[in-house]
Amino acid sequence: MTYAFEPGRPFSEDFRAIAAEQLTQAVMTLEDRPDGMHEAIHDARKNFKRLRSLYRLVAADVPLFQKHENARIRDMARNLSTVRDAAALVENAHYLKAAACNEEEERALAHVCERLTTRRDRITASATDIEDRVSATIVRCEQALQALSQVTFDDRRRKTADRLTKGWRRTLKRARRARQACSETSEAPAFHELRKRAQDYRMHLGLMHAVWPSALQAKRAEAKALVDTLGHLNDLAVMTQLINEDPGLAGNSQDQAHLIAAVIDRQGSLRKHALDLAAEVFQEEPDDESRTIRLLWLDAAR
Image 1 (cartoon, rainbow, N blue to C red):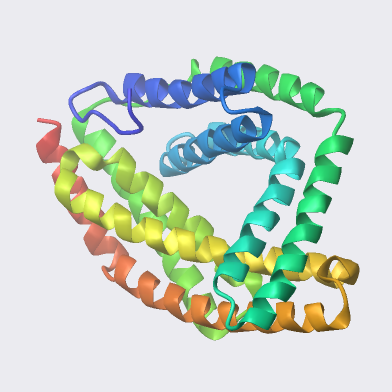
Image 2 (tube, rainbow, N blue to C red):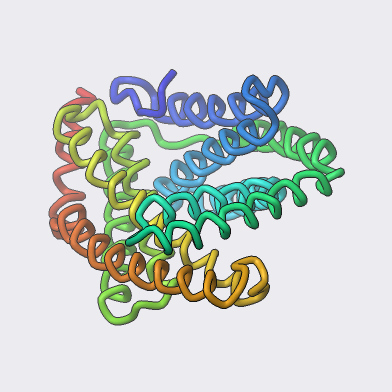
């Protein structure tokens, strides 16, 4: 299986197979941990993101299922987030260091990297309940699989096309509102919302890959670039909040000044780049693009 619909297959069967694969992969990764516990958690959370995007696409047809399962999956991801979030901050600090303007700033950011690495290791060592958290997550994945087995849709070709068109239009309209908000403010929550909407769009492009592989793959690459840019921006916002709460993590006043300067400079360029990318990714009208998706699906599902 891949994370993509097969237009000639009954939609209910296809939907359940795609979702079940994500849940099963998450369980296997958390049990086997081929690259260690923390990579397993990171990979499982990716599975959960794919699931939530899949469920949002069909929310209009199964609103209670989507609402309940979205909450379940969101809570599973949060249950595993503490250590991974600490590791992500270290990665972001190294990202800032790599883009340092001069040697002095690079040295200061190297100190920040060291402190955040120490913090990550401390959190990792103190996370004595991580095995219990993983076990609880596996149980909830099994519960999610049981809930999934009860979901059915009207599998007729035009009904399926209507369902996907409606979900597509909803995704694009939510993205448009998020873009508008980002054009009016530089606040982190607005850009975080745009990131979530861009992530959904990227996932949905993957799900619909079969109806026009070359065009949707190119579009998906553009959406990924937007998601990655917004991801860096979100990480900077999280880092800024953490440093505000615990200034000692940034070191002495000189290191703090370099960190703040680097963050402000990078945030400004990332916001501009994100808005430029978003204008390209979401350039079509929601109604127009969703109609195109409908026609492509109807043709592919003949």
